[in-house]
Amino acid sequence: MDGSLTDVSGEGFRLILDEELPEGTMIAVETDAHLILAQTRHCRPQGNQFTTGARRVHTISTFDLSASAGRIDKVQVLINDYQLRMHKQTAVTKAREQEKPDSHATMEGANRFEPHPVLTFHAIPAAGNPALPSLASMAPSRRNPG
Image 1 (tube, rainbow, N blue to C red):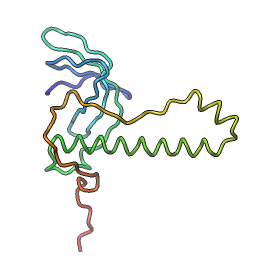
Image 2: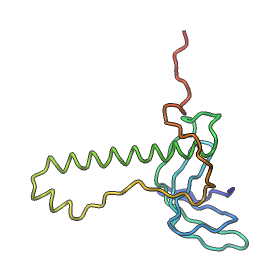
Image 3: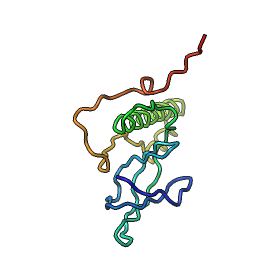
């Protein structure tokens, strides 16, 4: 769906859309320079459109993607990159907990929230078994000529 991106801040942005998106919907927003994974925080009617507030979850540069990649392929790369980042963060957290004395790790572990990278895209139409590219296959060639 097309929309207008407004009021961009460090953590989020506002979209003006023709359709309502439920709170908590995971969406992908493509701009000229970025592909953004975001979660809707609210959606309110504004005339015959909807103002949707969203929190940025993950961003990648569109310059790192193949120009010939389709929309679904780009979103899949964004999701793969986000899941890879979450996996690395979880591994680092677990390694740090193992380095701490047991009493501290137990106390801190009780209050720790570890996110699980399970995403559902309601705002993007489903495609019948699209090819799932990896980041390496989507990145433009950086070979040194000569």
